[in-house]
Amino acid sequence: MGVGNGHDPSTAHASVAAGDSLAADAAGAATPSLSRREALSLIAVAAGAAAFRVTPAQAADAASAAHLALGEQAASGAAFAPKFFTAHEWKTVRALVDLIIPRDERSGSATDAGVPEFMDFVMTDQPNSQTQMRGGLHWMDAQCERRFRTSFVACTRAQQTSLLDEIAWPKKAKPDVSQGAAFFSYVRDMTASGFFSSKMGVADLRYMGNRVVHEWNGCPPEALAKLGVHY
Image (cartoon, rainbow, N blue to C red; front, side, top):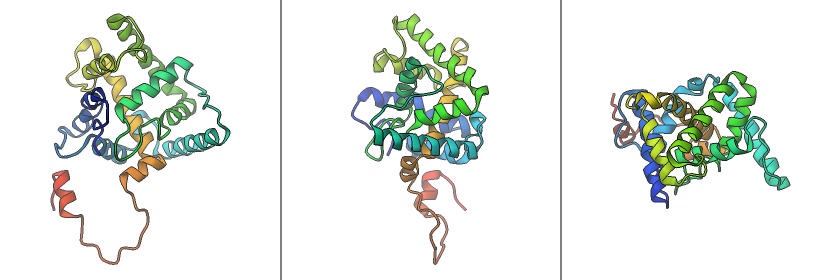
């Protein structure tokens, strides 16, 4: 299930930049046996949307609105029209979230799950978040223009991931890219929350819902071993 096991080797490289640090930054050190997507899901479930100042209820509302918009889009054949993101920002966000959660053998990518639409609803519902989002996207473009003479979305995958490698670990990021590191953490948390509150993300979690359990024997030993805990 690990993200970075897709067909593009550069996507696998992005898995280091875009995800392995999420559990390490939040919990001190990543559990080696956890895949990247599992680590993302743990953070999304444990922290909800608090990391980007949106309540879980607001995140659920945004996810529902995004899912409805995607359904209407599929029915009408019309493309989703973002209310906050400009056309260029929309392309950039879509590229960025798919580097964080690309499509793999278990489920679709962040864009397949409607994460960009989720983010657009969050931005319109939470105006105080707009400066951070727009400023961060501008910072990434400015860095790419300086390094590669083109925007982030127009860069090659290798160029994109070379930048992400520098900002994926905030505690290791150099001072001159600290703003980018803070922005990437913000977007990564929002991507995880958007994905794992979507229909696709819930299926990826294998959540069974409210079912009658006739006998409860505790958490399976293999799950405890995978998480590195015991009781």
